[in-house]
Length: 100
Image 1 (cartoon, rainbow, N blue to C red):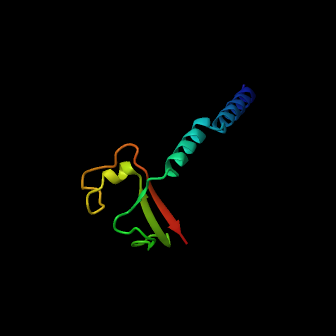
Image 2 (cartoon, rainbow, N blue to C red):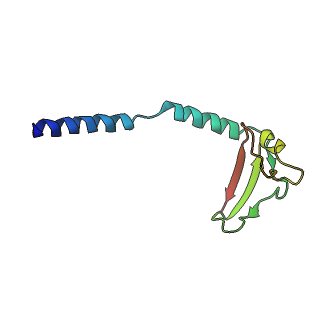
């Protein structure tokens, strides 16, 4: 009886492992859609620092530049800040470019 339990456990674990290793095709589709959205033109660089700047605070990134799509840009106030208590609407894309 113990032998059958061990064999059944190994078979179930093997099937579970095989199922968990399947490639998720929707993940690639989502990645492709996100990449297409990011490479669209029409981005605006952050109002306070349109050029490449040194990382702020304890940032591990050497130099950076931030840009927003039109949806995200519309959520910012005149100073280029997101008002307190607000959040970016659906469809907002913010890209942080990192330079060494």
